[in-house]
Length: 265
Image (cartoon, rainbow, N blue to C red; front, side, top):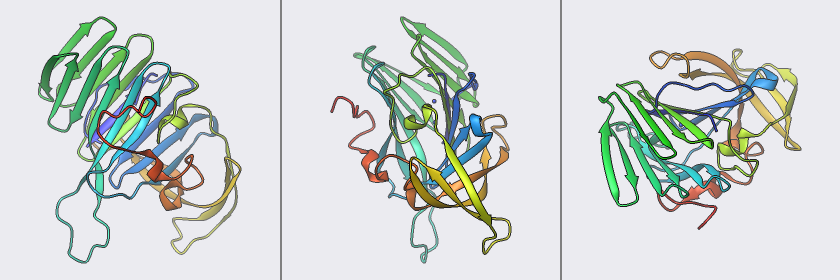
């Protein structure tokens, strides 16, 4: 799985986390589970996206910087015959910078950098720092990848068995996408906390984006600080593929290929 973090960041993949003041942190785990840190509330929001293996989702798009991050869902190992939904996770990332004519494909096995007509391939066994005009790429052996686009954005992907995380800061106010929309400030209120069928998972009412939602308190693992074991963090789970929390429907974020640029196409 890739784990990413950004200074303008996604299950198994990138390098050292770069934490910026007032930046949100995002994680994607199996299903995939999306974990959003909301520093202003000292809390986390989380939701699942349930789609079939092979589907590609736009995670971040910043039209001002010409940067796009997409992720492809892959299926977990064979599931039981009676399972109704196959478990998935984001097994591949595609990062595009149209201003630099760059495409970067990241999987749990390798990193492929395409700069115009030139292509270079690296593995997670490498320890390198690559610098060229406007781009710095650092691979830390079997740990993470740091990708910096000048003053625009820095993405961090942490290599982990089934997880991706993302931080972001230096992005424009026009940034969107399944995760990119949360790079800007998000406010919510929670009240009417009450017991659920599971005493460890209380229910509550949340007001967010002028929507009134029923949410559930659960725990997720954040691998940002501890890529090996993760840190348990509580979060408010938004049901039905994040309905009411994300803009539009979750299917609105489906793209045709790993390097689709929704703000151009």
